[in-house]
Image (cartoon, rainbow, N blue to C red; front, side, top):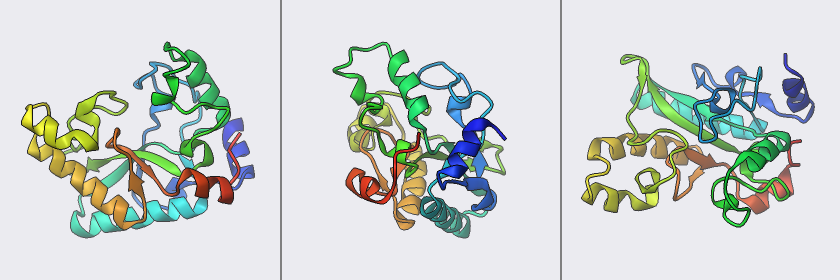
Length: 204
């Protein structure tokens, strides 16, 4: 077990795989396949969340598999400790004034830093691949924006089939008590920033 994992457990977080049967984990920040092109987690490859958030993911997984037994949730990121957030903030090659559009300021902390946000997609076990959501994870542009889907459809940037796949994800996540965000189809929050701050400590 990595030092980081021991720290997360000491702060009360749980390993999602111990709570959610069949869930798949591929922490994108343990690879170079992310917006920053950097492996910032190193040997940390397990996904941790606050216990009640992990329980909501379990509910989402149950909702998904009830309607689609061959589909499963695939998580790209869960808790993001502030130490990692600082690395991302420092390595983002943008002016400080616009950095918050891409990554939460570690001085303030975002919902990933409380362990109440999750980035995820859907994996099709029969096809042995992820569902086509129209863009890659961590894609910054209108084709990834749920808020812009009508416009992107009209412009031919995404397809109805891709939106239908996103709808499957949104339906099960909303059914489990999560809310999405307007600019990333993969990101869901279990609590507002205010609720998170009242209920939990920032994860160091």
